[in-house]
Length: 461
Image (cartoon, rainbow, N blue to C red; front, top):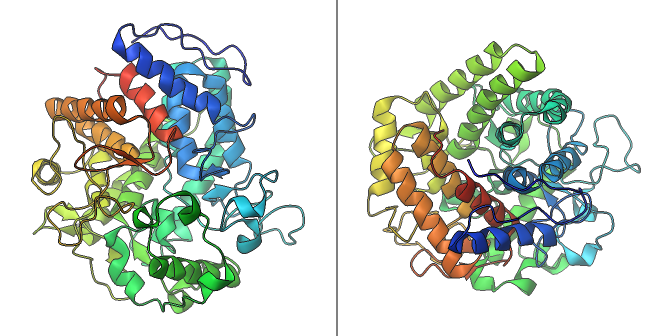
């Protein structure tokens, strides 16, 4: 382990004094500087160009990187997010900064109409937020942050977070188990984090397209980033229709099967939910709680994934549309994420590794895993989750490979990821053939996970 500089002040720059030496010292300093530049004083934004608020799973990945250079800020990021947790346990996918104007991001608080002092009713959250969730990476982030400096200060942070993390998991395990088989259902593609993945195409096709909704609202994303890199207007109109339906239903989950137009079970989301339970088991041992229920729930999630979302023919996991009961045949990167689960049967691990090394997804010496099957006819190297490389997903796959002792392949993936940021910088996502940066530059989770890769080259799992 490298001896990293401590962060002296929560509102000052990160400590970056010569942790590595050589060329990687420059990369380390550049990544740490991005996290400094994106720090608002209370939390870290994903980027300054397109994402001016706090995003849920971004905050988790960011804290993992900050743990190496600014652990107090890592804990502050997680606290900032969880102070917006809803009374039912859900953690919203966006927590809105009241100092950011509505014109700077859409859909903002006026669209979501959730949270803040003006909202009546005990079911609403304490801060302005969206009403949907994102993948629950937070327990893993809290555990990794604690591991970097397991002192009494960090233990106190775990004690504060633990009941809130448990409430988050309980919400996903109960209110969102629409299919009744132990998997959480997503009510919107945005909840997956893989917004416009082909994994959703079949379920989205049943949602009517009303392009008039785009005349009532103005897309902010295509004013900042090339429209060819973002979801289409047709998909975006569907996203707004689905979000409006959930909002207008009062964000209720009790009768989703009877009224909501989009309900899917995602293998990536649920795999991360299982991994969160295993992280909570470790946290429970630190805070004096019982780890056994967390381990049992993780095992149940793994079993449900194998039963409902595994396609033996492809060797991967696939999204299930709860409206039709059909598994989407598209081979998408979320179907590889169950690799993060340590109790996955060896045969299933090997089939996922086979997919990772196949021409469809193959890890190269200079190129990580794309977000979609390279051989698919609708593979798009530019458009968001329909082909480009995403750093956070590859970081998760790297951890999964190490967990299952595929060390050589893990090291190859790590090398490809670091080569990518050395060549192109810390972009939001990357062209899967050239490695060119796409989307927002100076992107926080790419910078944060670069720090983690640099700091932990030899550790396992």
